Image (tube, rainbow, N blue to C red; front, side, top):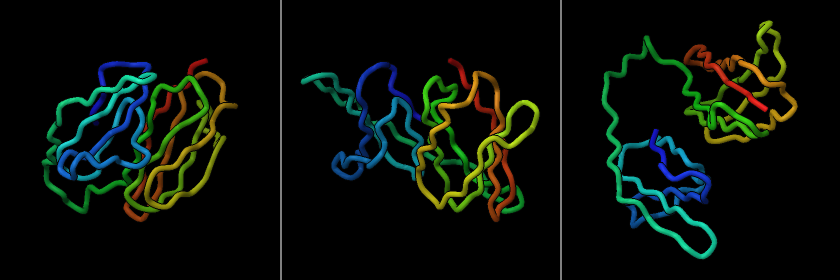
Amino acid sequence: MISAVASGYNYQWVKCDNSNALIIGANSQTFIPTVPGNYAVIISENDCSDTSDCSAIIFTGINNGAFDQPQLFIYPNPIAGNIVFFETDDAIAVEVLNPLRQIIFEDSFGSGKHQVNLGDMRAGVYSVRATSLLGQKTVKLVKYE
């Protein structure tokens, strides 16, 4: 994950290796690249904008199928507003569970980014469980008012 230090502005992430091509939908303060490369962010407010230096993102590690899990990224986390973004590598079923482990939201998604309105949730700590052909993964989600 890479983040712009400046907060409260408009953001557009670009792929430096592709003549600073805009990355569709990548307009949050943080960005999670799905492929290695060089990335930058354009930060703007009103009529002013500036582009950061390019940052190299290199993926390292050993891929062992026995340890694969669904790829689930939630941002922003914690959330104050209504929107949670899911970014997945493959089709998944998602459940949001309250502290009593009751399912309060469920849906399924194909690969890519998805916006979900969770504005009716009360402040608290929730579990988000993703299930795919690779297995199951659970992450915490914090909601504050």
